[in-house]
Amino acid sequence: MLSNEHMDTLIARDIEGTISGAEKQELAGWLREDPSNQAYYDALKDTWHLAADAWNEMPEPDTAANWERFSQKIETQAPAPLKVAHRGRSKWLAAAGVAAIIATGITIFFNRSDKNVTLAATTEKQLFTLPDGSKVYLNRHSTLQYNERFAQNNRDITLQGEAFFDVAPNEAHPFIVHAGASQTEVLGTSFGIKAYGEEPVRLNVVTGKVAFSNATRKSGALVLTAGHAATVQADKDPRAETATDPNFTSWKDDRLVFQHVPLRATFEAMEDYFGITIKVDDPSLANLDYMGTFDQPDVDSMFKVIAASTNVKIVEESKGVYSVRK
Amino acid sequence: MNTSAVLSSTIRPDRRFTKAQTGYFCNMSENDRLLQLLREDEHQFMKALFQAYFALVCKSIYRLVPDMATAEDLAQEVFIKVWNRRGQLEEVYFKAYLHRAAVNMALDHIDKHKRRGGPPQEIGPAAEEQQATAPVVHLAETQTRIRQAVDALPEKCREVFVLSRYEEMSYKEIASTMQISVKTVENQMITALKKLRHSLREYLE
Image (cartoon, rainbow over all chains, first blue to last red; front, side):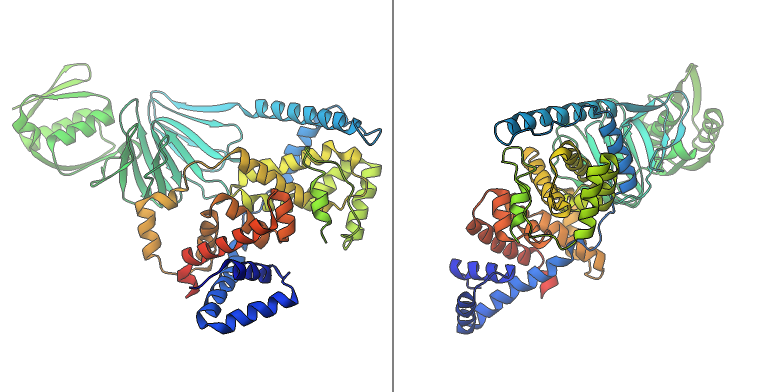
């Protein structure tokens, strides 16, 4: 493509519609000189026309709700604006007055909107419906926090612990979960996040699509679709997991599934699910292959089934601590 | 039709207050009704103005600051400024006044909050893969891709392009609003079109 600065200027004016008669003739002459000039001009014009469609569909702001917010703001803002008595120096004083009023109004407003709502599950998992209609299953010992303007201005939420989200669609406000080192932006619908203490944060996507990134680094974001998993650690970019954990939502669904996994992994899932400790001293036992599905599992009957099928002995040494032997 | 450049100065505190000139009265009745309300009942005036133009203000801001929550907050601030100046609004043409105020509010916001990082679509390997393989079928998707391409333009270039293409401002108006020369506006326009031409090439061939 040929281009020169003067012709670019004429093309810009042509697009704006302010090109003069003489300039138009000059441009037409240049276009006739070489077919590649014409191609260059056409390409820019086509791009201009194509770009027109960018905003055909856009979210509609809620004028009624915004008016409510606005009228509350101006009611808390008692003093009337200063009338300008004389044109001249005094209008700068008036401007200063107005600026002061605006500043106060905004401070009050931000203070009022800074309240956070906290949802917590202590010893039992819990199901919550958020103000935007999204559902959250919160696992034991987990908390969620969001600003009271959640759903009006943003859908930012902070998680400690583990939760499963079933997110209501809303194009205007992306649903963003901050958990440990991670930030997850929801592009689709449902997923689970596990973020306990300093451990890597783990994400499993069940349906739809999410963008998963390190909250502080912002680089290397992963877009994950249904059936995929990833983890992220502080100071590292997120990493896609090759295998997904079928028991990622076991705490929500009350179902544990083992498909030919080592007994070690079976016990780890049980430790997670029941909050118990299982000790296996003999490595040959830990590597035994195991397969089975448990609905509404309870510790005692699961151990009975596992002990019978793998020929091991499981004893409760102390409350919540089990030991596995030959 | 360059009165809007003058109108914009009423909203920027660092410039002199100037009355609107009389080039814009193509919609006298609505504007007159608002001016009359302003004299009679400030609150009714504000409500009518808000209902008539909030969406317009909000959308103009959104095209420059593509986040609806932020756009709504900024649009609220535009109307707060109008409310605080209600004693001085004597012969204003409200639609143009609010449009210019919206653009200024959005540009100020961008200046104050330089964008950090990029949207994940630009940097995630999975997203790149998707862009390469996604078939070009859906109109809504085309629109999204155009928006992404516009959003990926360098900051000043993007501002110039959005103001010209979507806010329908003349180069002269853009130059005075952004405090740059008309020559720079023309250069940025061509730069924008060349970059868009490249990033949207699959739609243009």
